[in-house]
Image: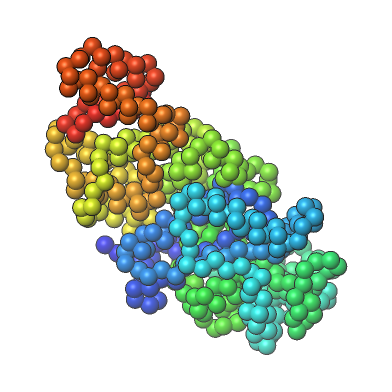
Length: 454
């Protein structure tokens, strides 16, 4: 089975063929580190974590790069409000970011470049654009990209350049030749951080950061560029224009975009004020619940956020953990079900992959109930869970997190088992009734006694 991915650039599913056999270069736009991450950010991280995991499962050596934007207007404003330097703010927020994303079970990328460490690379790229005539110094001193000099502008987003200009407004203070031209280098303002450049002290525009950092780590042409759907235009469109005009390479060959997280049919975002931080959500729900919730919808589709949806995800995880509790860890190797691999190879279809996982779970429980060995199915169960990044906690930890004292329950079960051995059935029944009164149901099977919440 070959991997097919939906390529925003071609607007269809393309068979994935890497530039270099056995290797994959993947760049994903990260976060601007001025505040805690919200659920929309979490979706990007979980989506591309699953993609990263599956590419590795297919045997690829993946060079996964995800950046931090650590200088921009929001960062400067927030640092000033708090009376601290931007480095102090961004360092703090990067630590918080890692805490949140680690809690969601995301594997760290190969590289996490910070924009401020790549000023020389950005200045070099801008200079190339100046040398080729694709950039110019505007009336206000900023360096601007001449959009109409790039023939393919609008191809990724499907936007027509003339339609874009008709809907834009010219800001004469910016000194642009064309209203669509965008900033590559901003001239310094008083009391703002600035770096030396051939055009005077200043700092980079947002778009040039990702073009420079991706090419530094992955080369002028690489395999996958990813990010949220909101970045398709203008950010990703501008990245393409800059990188291809400066370097002459093809830049990213496959463009993958995840859908929005919506609340009441409206995109979740900080600008709209309708967002929930990861930290707020995980005070009420285990982070694995949030991950499970996201896996239940195809990554390109909109995701409707609600407590009800999280409760459904929690119930699904409880079922999986109940199955895990019935089985010991097995070192036996088992191939993945063909249906699971087919789902993941079909543009990383996690809802279908989850359906296969639950089918396997039902089969395991039937085998155990019939007194049969389920080692092979269990090995497949463990591999599927690992690839999706779920059911990775110890069972007792999981059910403790659900306000259940697992150690107390296990003590009662042990006492009941001993009572049964002693043929003290009155005591055994009393212990079962005590657990039932606490909402715990016991199930006796050939592999021993298991329990679940009623």
